[in-house]
Amino acid sequence: MLERLFRLAIILGVLAALYIAYWKVRSSSRSNADEPPPWRDSRVLVVAAQVAALGLIWSAADYLWANFRARTSDIGLELDFGFLDQPSGISIADPLKRRD
Image 1 (spheres, rainbow, N blue to C red):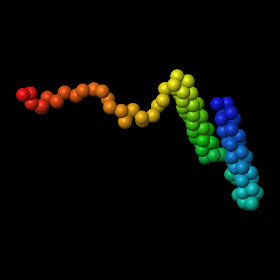
Image 2 (image 1 turned 90 degrees about the horizontal axis):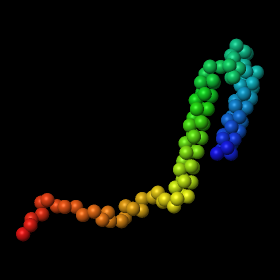
Image 3 (image 1 turned 60 degrees about the horizontal axis):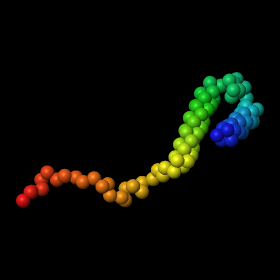
Image 4 (image 1 turned 45 degrees about the horizontal axis):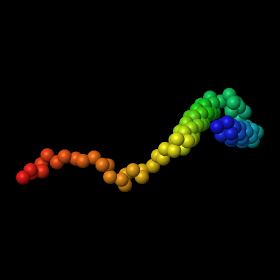
């Protein structure tokens, strides 16, 4: 779990560094220097908050799924659709059947 969070943090850090580098190149080539840097731009902060929230939700779901699969594997519970090929063993009464 910690390894996955560390990997996610590295990916997000690299993406942030690439965006900042892109912003610096773009702002140096423009004559309009009135734009705020990306860490103070509200549009960038909104997107960054959404990406961070999505990353947290994804990490929590991944942790819960891995935990669920490990626990079912430990107790020997197979979760598959193999039971669909087996007969149910329940007799169903037919009220329309004639009794002679």
